[in-house]
Length: 140
Image 1 (cartoon, helix red, strand yellow):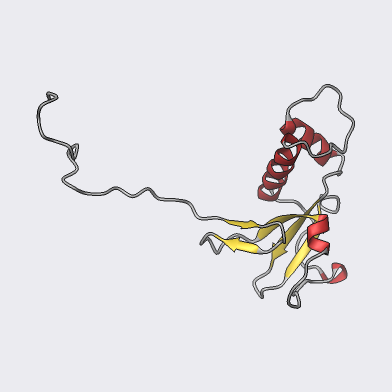
Image 2: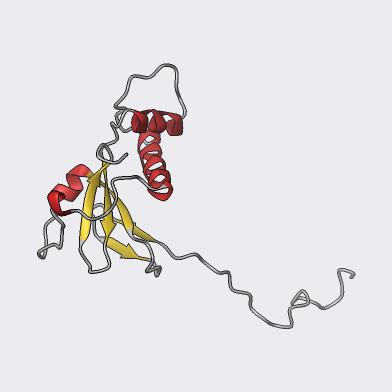
């Protein structure tokens, strides 16, 4: 085509393309879920001080002695924990392990996870609406 031809639709005939967006769910700083539309998300990562200072309606927390879910960390929880902690470290959060020349926030987060020093909680939501809070140090 030349520069003088009229084809401003670029062969689309006026059709508008919309981009598909994956929907997600994140926990805000109060530990409350902000739903992006995906109902299948069943865990949230919270800092320990946020989970303990929650104010609001009565919660449906399951006691530590009555937890039903497995004490094993899933690969999805591990990825989210490492990503969350690496982001915190990159934004100058205090590092909780001795550094031996590491500068990459992800490597530092992996070292913290290996030593079980990450100050985060995994909140696992159950089908009945209740949830279980697991400390990263409790998970295998």
